[in-house]
Length: 327
Image (tube, rainbow, N blue to C red; front, top):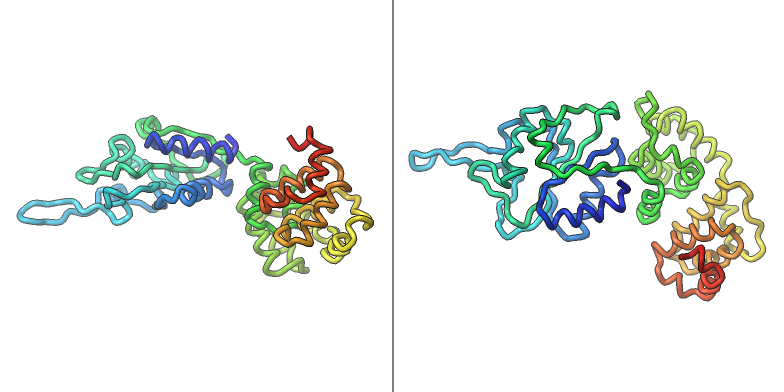
């Protein structure tokens, strides 16, 4: 299931209060989706790494009071009966079987011994798949039967929309638009390998250090040898920021790059600065000069960040002439 669809389904499942488990490859964004939902709905999020729990942690510790032992639940379990939130057990299937078994009562009855989960709370969990060479334990059938299971797929279009909002470096966006299969590649035996999370790290490195002679060595430890060689070569030969700025100074007449990778880099750069009016004005002109499919990509990217772009006269003209493509 695509991330955008996962988010929609999860929000609906939250209303049922039924526990849900997200399955997917490492670095795909499973945890990020849960955080986004919590932020969107203004819910408290308690992120528990199940792999760090002991089997008795959920029960808490006994405290003697008036010749009786009462159990004090752990502080990470919500206590306020009026509170609302998401109790998120990340890496659940990386926890040993006894730890997983300790969740039986909580996931089914919403309680652990004397502790009762407040009505406003939902239980979500996530974990990597065994086929992804991750550390996993087989989930007991009794626990598995207590969850709604959703398979989380990496989808480039969904990721690209997220990346625009997250201001991922234009070089990363430009490269991956031409090599979409490298957004996620688990076939590598290197310590680093391409995942959405890895490319976010690459973006941060580029923002901090730029394209340097040491870039390849750093990339090797993030996305592995194959992807780092390709991306380093792309960066060395990509259209420069200086040339992009010259194009934007005279968008009507400037010659546009011929290489598809450079065209994507131009689109990514313009998108990243689309909060600036002169850049939006130049982008409006670019719409009529780019190939239709690239113009539509630019239009959608900018509208995602600057909805008022649709009121630009050149944009209205483009949309009127390309109604079938826009719709």
